[in-house]
Length: 63
Image (cartoon, rainbow, N blue to C red):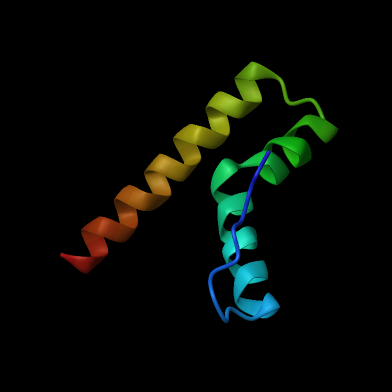
Protein backbone atom coordinates (compact mmCIF):
# COMPACT_ATOMS: atom_id res chain seq x y z
CA UNK A 1 0.00 0.00 0.00
CA UNK A 2 1.34 3.41 -0.97
CA UNK A 3 0.94 6.10 1.66
CA UNK A 4 1.42 9.79 0.90
CA UNK A 5 1.50 12.16 3.82
CA UNK A 6 0.41 15.68 3.01
CA UNK A 7 2.93 18.32 3.97
CA UNK A 8 1.93 21.68 5.43
CA UNK A 9 0.30 23.93 2.81
CA UNK A 10 0.82 21.34 0.08
CA UNK A 11 -1.65 21.35 -2.78
CA UNK A 12 -3.51 18.24 -3.81
CA UNK A 13 -1.88 18.46 -7.25
CA UNK A 14 1.62 18.15 -5.80
CA UNK A 15 0.59 15.30 -3.52
CA UNK A 16 -1.02 13.51 -6.46
CA UNK A 17 2.16 13.97 -8.49
CA UNK A 18 4.21 12.42 -5.67
CA UNK A 19 1.73 9.53 -5.49
CA UNK A 20 2.01 8.91 -9.22
CA UNK A 21 5.81 8.85 -9.01
CA UNK A 22 5.77 6.34 -6.15
CA UNK A 23 3.18 4.22 -7.94
CA UNK A 24 5.25 4.17 -11.13
CA UNK A 25 8.39 3.16 -9.21
CA UNK A 26 6.64 0.11 -7.76
CA UNK A 27 6.05 -1.25 -11.28
CA UNK A 28 2.55 -2.53 -10.55
CA UNK A 29 1.04 -1.22 -13.76
CA UNK A 30 3.91 -2.52 -15.89
CA UNK A 31 3.55 -5.99 -14.40
CA UNK A 32 -0.21 -5.92 -14.83
CA UNK A 33 0.14 -5.15 -18.53
CA UNK A 34 2.74 -7.85 -18.99
CA UNK A 35 0.44 -10.43 -17.38
CA UNK A 36 -2.46 -9.61 -19.69
CA UNK A 37 -0.91 -11.58 -22.53
CA UNK A 38 1.36 -14.57 -21.95
CA UNK A 39 4.71 -14.41 -23.69
CA UNK A 40 6.73 -17.57 -24.23
CA UNK A 41 10.19 -17.63 -22.66
CA UNK A 42 11.87 -17.97 -26.05
CA UNK A 43 10.06 -14.87 -27.33
CA UNK A 44 10.90 -12.92 -24.19
CA UNK A 45 14.56 -13.91 -24.49
CA UNK A 46 14.57 -12.87 -28.15
CA UNK A 47 13.12 -9.45 -27.24
CA UNK A 48 15.79 -8.95 -24.57
CA UNK A 49 18.52 -9.72 -27.11
CA UNK A 50 16.96 -7.33 -29.64
CA UNK A 51 16.89 -4.54 -27.08
CA UNK A 52 20.50 -5.19 -26.10
CA UNK A 53 21.63 -5.09 -29.74
CA UNK A 54 19.71 -1.86 -30.30
CA UNK A 55 21.25 -0.21 -27.23
CA UNK A 56 24.71 -1.35 -28.28
CA UNK A 57 24.32 0.14 -31.76
CA UNK A 58 23.16 3.43 -30.24
CA UNK A 59 26.21 3.52 -27.98
CA UNK A 60 28.57 2.82 -30.87
CA UNK A 61 27.03 5.61 -32.96
CA UNK A 62 27.45 8.13 -30.12
CA UNK A 63 31.14 7.36 -29.63
